[in-house]
Amino acid sequence: MPALADPRYAALWERSPGRSPFSHPAAVAAYARAFDLPARILAVEDDGGEWTAAVPVFEKRRGPFVASALPPLCPVHRPLLAEPLSEAATHERRSPLDDLLTRLDAETDQATFALGDDDLRPYAWAGWTATPRATYHLALDGDVEARFSSDVRRRLRRDAAAFEVVEDPALAATSVALMDASYLRHGTALGLDVGAMTRVAEALQAAGLARTVAARRGGEVEAAVVVASDGRTASYWIAGSVPGSAMTVVIRHVLHRLADEGVETFDFCGANTPSIAEFKRRFGSVLAPAPIARRVSHPALRLADRLRPR
Image (cartoon, rainbow, N blue to C red):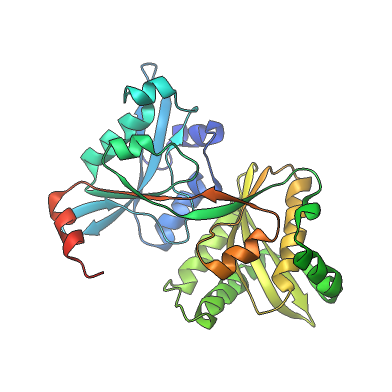
């Protein structure tokens, strides 16, 4: 498989309609370093040598077996395609995605992707299973605030003036700490190394793929979010706050800033916990699919999965 530094991968990322900040070469390298997941690129070429499809493979060992893993903190991990799939080629199972999945099956024993509004049929036909999950998307066109719920608008009128909103890359670690504390407050341990999470956030910031925005009151940070963006889409990626209105104030600032910069869509990165999903819905966002697709090709791993306690 080609190395991550192969310039053909960066060129494909630039043109791919399904790219995300998390599939940028710098992001892939950051995930690999932070979580000790050696990364290589699996690619498909056309007859002229142009890459038509590619995906990073984050190698993880399960005993003697090789898995293509979904890295922690990676809300989107999907193949990059040079152009939208032809339905005719999909039906004939000769699309670049079909070729890529065939090669992935031959070179790994297990693979996991975090998809979006992808056509799931090529995955199903190749023996993958998809677990339904959801997220919320907000189009950053027109009057964004007009879509906010009455509760959000009321909070902003009442509390926004109490906060100072700042953009500061040095606060990425604070955002990670607030996110970790938020999980603990709700009785669930995030289970990730805070240092590794911070290193990933800082690496994406250094590559121009992320920024940290925070709300302070009385000099104390009450909410912070690391927003990842590829210039077309942006993601509510690493976020945490103390109870109150601080995060609502941060999100309003972020949405206006991104809209002014020409970003088209904001992904709230998940709508799978009822209370959190409701918070995100109130900004006028629209439910969107975010399935997890998985393929276990080796019979021994399939047996191990069936025997694993649920």
